[in-house]
Length: 163
Image 1: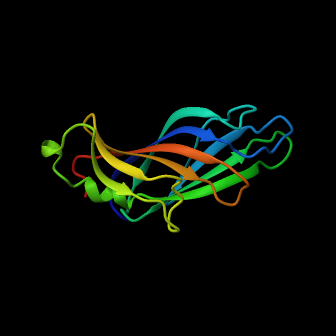
Image 2: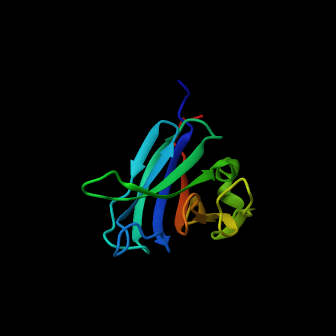
């Protein structure tokens, strides 16, 4: 088994123009997967623009792991309907966590990631040094669905003694 590299805090901020799966909207929730770990947000009733502001913490055992995100519509009597998915490369954040933050001003942009065919970014995403932590804000365009974006914030948490 590989050692622990650190923790990735993922703040699921909100959904934007998510797909309708029921007559009055959808009851969306987000599933995050990193390696074998899987975490879910709460379900937001009848909303295609849900606001979660929920923080989910995943253990990172390998710096090149891809964070997978799926959105589902909660159904009571049938299987939950898929509402799109996205993948996030955590490497840009991982590349800066070894930097010495003493010389970095609060709010400084350290790295920018542009939308490409290899990521699901809707807009340019910046890795910043903010309030003593490396954070990356992003809006992901969902794939395999008619519409929808998810706003996230990634935050790296270093574990003392981890590789």
